[in-house]
Length: 437
Image 1 (tube, helix red, strand yellow):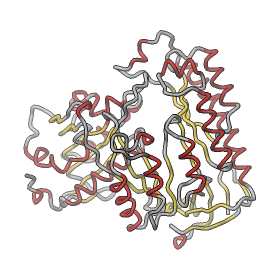
Image 2 (cartoon, rainbow, N blue to C red):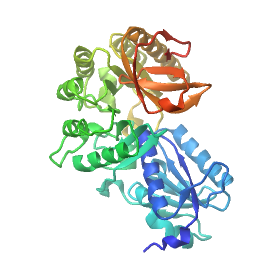
Image 3 (tube, rainbow, N blue to C red):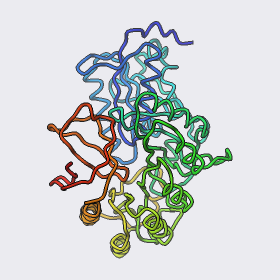
């Protein structure tokens, strides 16, 4: 049993890398520690506990994690340093060897930091950091998590883990099998967010379209239930696999009260041969059919697309197939990633490799294509009425807001406008690609 009185009036500093899922989980850790009497350290204040939630999607992510751990130790000398997240799950010994680390927690233990406070206090000794980590294949638990972005937009974790085994990806080893909460649990958390002033919720997870599998529930059922939650103006669907984004889901979004016309769909490659090498569960014909169906029923929807360049096996002619496919596709914006080799992945068995210079060249071509599509999308929104939720941040005297279809709009800062909704027609586009109102 935890003696929480030991930690009364103590402070904690939080560091997060990686996806919005990690940010949601870090916020949940912070709330659980606050219940133990541990508040978040103020800027410049020395913390007694540091919690670092790590990412390991690329080698660069690993480097950033190591740098952040050292930074936390430097900024809070003498603090108990707890490292968790994907990097901690995949390489716990490497993490534990970093100077200053007190405790390394795996994926199963991530949201139970409060349970290990007694270990932090009494069991770290000269032998080094304590590692508490299980096998991801044994993880069955799911904990709903949420975080806020300046209190207006919240990120709500509805699913975790993945049963897909794409050849380039370490996520199944880092986060375990696919699992999710119940519709009732997620709705309850959405209602809590509404009660504290949240206006927009982004549904996050590793493979959110897999929600409810094995429970008799579905992602469509979740979306339908959330659409009835009062107090939330809109829900956004984060990244969802194209084979799980059914026409039924798209059609519901087109007629819903609160589901935003905004889709983020991972393509990864526009070459069927590369998709086969990646062991993706669709081909480009299916992907095109999803995008075209969105455009039929939601012509002004924002469609973001993930693409990886330079994967093993992506020969020059296969990249050209990808580029030509994307040229012909009615997307809004690309999110371009350069392939990073990860230990233990099946992709390492593929022979053909792409040089760093060629990866950069391909990435630049796709980013230029993305800019063309994004500019055309914004131009298409001129003269159309948008519903904008104003956000808290101030940027050189301006405040930002986003429309239902994720168009950025700016107006002179007005503290009373934060969290309010304005229906407006943009009159001009500034040099940064933002509509000015």
